[in-house]
Image: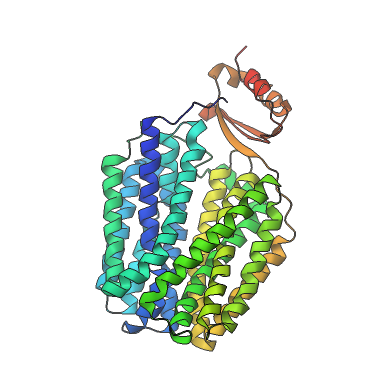
Length: 456
C-alpha cells in the first residue's frame, strides 16, 4: 500500500505520451464543433438536419466500436489497435476535407468516430504503470481531454477563418498522424497485455453495472450532457453570427472567455464538493444551471453581451459536470468493475452525442434556434428530476492490490480484508493474483491492511 516517491521515467513517458495521443485525437474531434454549423451551410445538400447529423456523426461509430476495440486490444495488442484507430481517424479527416457535400462530411465524421481507441489507450496505461501510480496517469489523460476541448473551441474558429472548414479537417488528419508517431516511437512497448478490471471491460461485471440504479443515473446523465453539447453547437454558433452579428472567424474570443471564466468558477465548486462531501448537491446545482441557462440563451440572442454571459454560464455548468461525473462513477462502481462501468459510461456519452446532433439539427430545421434551446432545457430538467433521487455517494477510493500466491489459498483472506477499518468493498480475483478494494481514506487503517496482506 505504501507508494513509491515518484513515477519511474518509463511510467512518466508512457503517461505523458499517451495523454498527448488522446489530446491530439480529441482536439481533432472537437475543433469541428464551433464551426460546422456556420461553415457547413455552404456544402452541397446541406440542411439543418444533416448539419446536425454531421456534428454528432462520430458518436454513432464511437459508441458501437469503443468496447469491441478495447477487447480486440486484449487479443492483438494495444499498439496495433491504437495505430489502426488513428489511421481510420486520419482517413476520416481527409475524406471530410475533400468533400464538397454534406454527405461527404458525414462520411468523414463517421470514419473519424470509427477510430475508437479510448478503451485501448486506457488499457495500455494500465499495462505500463504500477498500481500506485495508475490513478495519476489516468488523471493526466483526463486533464489532457479538458485542455484539448478548450484549445479546440478557440482553434476551430481561427483555423476556419484562415483556411475554411476544409483546413480544419486537414489539421485533424495531421493531428492523427502526430499521434501515430508518438504511439510507434515514443510510447513504451508493454511487456504483456494485462487484465486490469479498473481500466478494462470484463464480461462478468456487465450485469452488476447495468443493474445498479445509481450507475444508470450516471449513464443517463452523461448521455444527456453530450446530447445538449452537440445540440447546442448546432444553435450557439448560428446565434452568435446571425442574431448577435458576430462574424464566425471572431467566435474564438467568446469561447476563450467562456472557458477561462468557467474554469475559475468550477474549481472552487469541485474542491467544496469533495472536501465537504456534497457531490450530489453540486451536481444537481450544475444540472439545474444547465437547464435554466437555456431560456437565457434564447432570450439574449440579439444582444452580444448578454449572449456571451449566457454562454459563460453554460460552460460553467457543462465543465463542472464533465469533471464531476467521472469522479462520481469511480465512487459508485462496484469493486473490480470500474473499467466495465467506465466502458458503458463512455458508450452512453457517445450515443448521447450522436443523438444530440440529430435532435439539434431536426429541431432547428423545424422551429428555429429557440426550439433547440428549449429542447436542451427539457433534457436537462429530465436529468435533474432523475438525479434528485440519487444517494449521496460513499467517499471511497479504489485500489488494486497485488497478492502473494500463497495468500490466494487462504479462504479467510477476503473476510479479514473486509474487517479492516475503512475498507468498504473487496473482491479477490485469483487469476490476476490481486484484490480490488474500495476504501474511505479518512478511516482506513493502512498498517492493519498491510499486516493482513503479508503472508504468514
